[in-house]
Length: 123
Image (cartoon, rainbow, N blue to C red; front, side, top):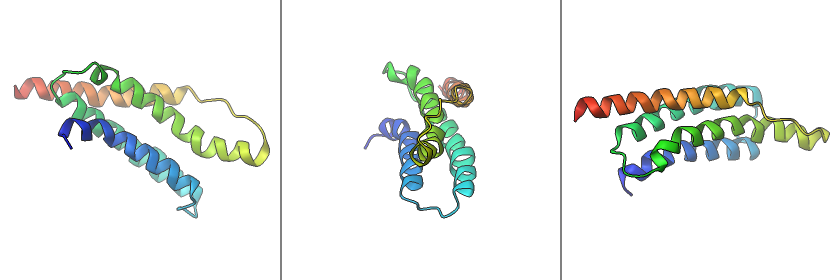
């Protein structure tokens, strides 16, 4: 597999591992799972994934949209774990928290812009 493909798939794989880990009950402590996966591992993976994408030569249009796509995935993560479990248990449909879209996109853009800066410094 090419290095570029691994860069693009890094956050997406961690995103799905987080969702399936929560859904399959791999954690007996949902609060600890949320702190570790949603607020520590995912933002770090988001930053590093976008840093690696930013450091690559821009040949595809997806590299410019990648920070927005990963920001959307960051917003969906708590919704597809905690909010979905709450909806199934109580029947109440919870709205999306769009403030997480801003947070995820800002983390993504920071990693992406630092990666672009490093790429231009090295070339």
